[in-house]
Image (cartoon, rainbow, N blue to C red):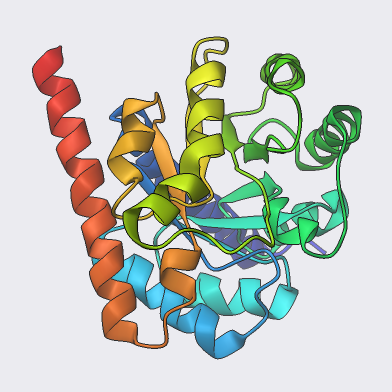
Amino acid sequence: MYNEQDVLSQSTQKEKIMSRIESFKRALEEKRAVKIIAGIDNFDVENVKKVVNAASNSGASAVDICANPDIVAMVRHMTDIPVFVSSVNPQELAHAVILGADAVELGNFDALYKKGQSFTANQVLELAKETKRLIGNDVFFCVTIPGELEISEQIELARELENIGVNLIQTEGHFSNETPSNGVRGLLERAELTLSNTIELSRNIEIPIMTATGINPTTASLAFAAGASAIGCGSCINKMDSEISMLAVSKSLVEIAERNAQYTVELV
C-alpha cells in the first residue's frame, strides 16, 4: 500500500546520503581526504564505537567499518560523517547500502591475507562487476587493488575498474609475519609498497587514489606526495586502547591532510 510518510522518509534519507558523500568528494578533489578504518574484520562493537568517535570528533572525511548489519546500523546512528562499508562479498555491500552506508568498498584485502586468502586481478574485477550490478550507478564505489599483484597487473586492473565506473581506487601494501625494524625505519618499511603502488597507479589512471596500509602521522605526507588524493588509516588508530590517543592521532592525520590541501592550492 502506498504510504506517503515512508516515501518522504526514503527521499530524506537519500538526500542525506548524497550530501554526506558530496562532502567526501570535495575532500578528494582538494586532496585532503582522511578515512579512518575500523577494520573489515573488526566486529568488536566497543572498539568500533571508539574508532567512529575519533573519526567524527577529529574532522576526518569518512570512517570505514565491516559489513556486519548490526554494526552498520549502529554506526549510521552514531555519526553524520560518511560511512564506508568494506567487504569482499557483493551481497553484503548491497545490503549495507540499504542500511544507510554512504559508500561501499570492495576490500581491504590486507586483513584477509592473514587468513591465507588471496585474490587475482580477474577475481577482483568480477567481484567489482557484480557489486556494481547490485548497487547501481548512484552509490559511491571504492575498490582496493591487491598489493600482492605485480604492478603491471595492478595498472591493468585499475584501468578496467575505471572503465566500469568505479569512483575511487585504494592501494595497499602486503601482509608480513616478519618482525619490522624499530622506529621510523619500521614505519617506512611497512608503507614502502603501498607508496610505490600509489606512484605507479597515479601515473596511469584518472580517478582518485586512496593510499592505505602503514599510513600514519609519519608516512601520511609521503602518501600525498606520491599522488594520493586520500589516505586510509587503520592500525595506527584502531589498535589503541585509549580514546584520547585515538582522537589525537586522528587529529594529527587530518591536520597533515589539510596542510597538503593548502600546499596544493598554493602551487596552483
